[in-house]
Length: 226
Image (cartoon, rainbow, N blue to C red; front, side, top):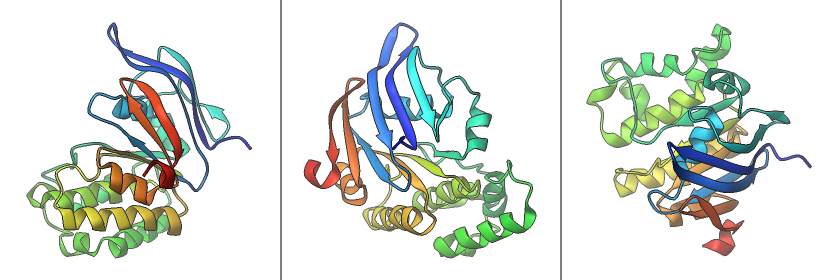
């Protein structure tokens, strides 16, 4: 069976310094896969390579049977890949509502957009309470809920999450972890999860890759790696 997402011998450099060295990994449709490792291991670089935010030096990236490493970032989004970047990058002076609608900028089906909006607000009730509030005035955990919801507004088939637990209170980390499981299960969205919180990542994923200095050091079933 052809993997839903595959990276084959991917090399990525920042100027003359390599960030990824021969990385090969796969995500099957309907699966949650974790990428774990220390700062600088190359986890975020993998997400940037997939989304077209950073051009790879060599290797290939395929999504749903199509090569995507030569596509611009907007074309990758339109294929059904959404990324939640590290650091909760909301539009701070825009309301929660307008932040969410920004996530649907590639869609023209207003009725379906409205249904997706109802879905994310039911999944994250706190956002409904803050609906008209400026996003920048919310807590870190609430902003994290918002950026995940904004990504879901694009109706992705693959969700890339970069350190969703970073700087979040422990109780909210549990809430976000449960939400990731529910999104994968209920919305049938495949997930590639980048995390330094290895225990959380391994508990909510089926498979995992452990990176060190730009290479895959370990891979296998998450339960085994845990």
